[in-house]
Length: 197
Image (cartoon, rainbow, N blue to C red; front, side, top):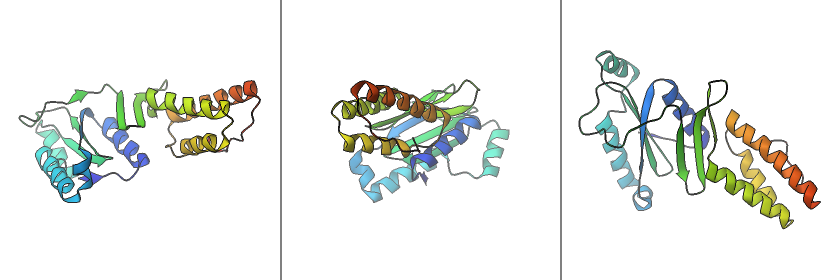
């Protein structure tokens, strides 16, 4: 099973799945103890891969589709296994927990990060920070400005630069810059914003 290295790769794979007909999904969380044990993790990933036949090559997936069977794609990222499924005849006893996404999915990647996949006003798939993550980020920046804590402020701003450059996230960053400028003006504080925000 494919192990995703970073958030950028995760977003690319999800967009590829949703954009190519994988119309439902499920997310399985692996307990931390098992995820940290490489032998147990390897066993779990192999079991899921064999169960859903998510390792099939392009030709095998095409034959499946031609015969009316569903295809599956599974990958592992930050203690979660993400499984996407196309329409078609499904594997027996394996369909519990799959949800249709209708181009809207909230991914709770960790305790401090969630991402929303959605279609923007142009009809294109993009990502934005989930409501919880965005509000927490905004609140931390507000506290830093109110307390005139430059170190915390710049740490939070630096974290913003690490997010993938998708339209939804870029719009949120722009909104945060307006929010920061307004707040700094009211508080008469001036922290420099780097260009990558």
